[in-house]
Length: 226
Image 1 (cartoon, one colour):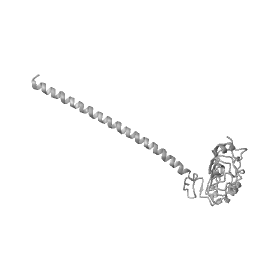
Image 2 (cartoon, rainbow, N blue to C red):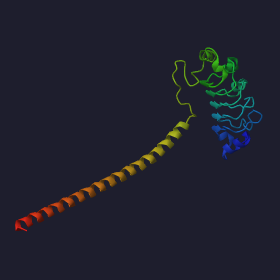
Image 3 (cartoon, rainbow, N blue to C red):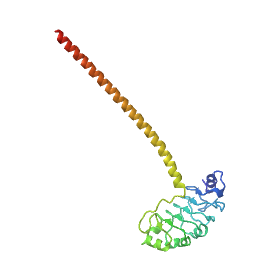
Image 4 (cartoon, rainbow, N blue to C red):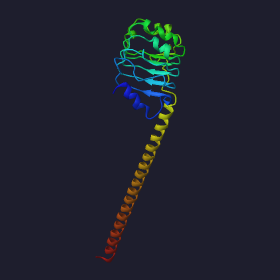
């Protein structure tokens, strides 16, 4: 699906200004460029364009409120100046699986003072000597590089604000339904086991009663000399 059509589909009868999260993963960019995205998405905070065959982010519109940008698995090799110019509030940037080879390519990111986390997994730049130390020195505002800080402490979950809570609520609801079902099943199993135990006890009592009856009959016959 083309990117423009995907954007229209994701709008779902909303105005662009009402959209805070936009996921365009796996659609088709036009000649490796962003199309259909405009400054009308003025309140956009999270944008994901994973595997859309991007070569450049030069067509990215001005998005002052954008905080998280997912660009993994594309073919971007440079031109990151556009991000510094058009996404001044950016805090998280994922460039994993792109064609970034040199540290100098990342230099424009120094102009993003709020940038907290950058991911460069599967980029050639990660093969450079002292890669981590060099990037953290180049971009001192970073706390996390490839999911870990300078002390190798893992970054906390950085999903869009509010998304985690929604997912947690859904999981709690699902868990509640499942748990209730399991409780019901457990109750049914307990009831079945109780019934089986009662039936077994009754049969044993009937068997004992029969044995006593036969023994009494036998003793009675012996007493009569039969």
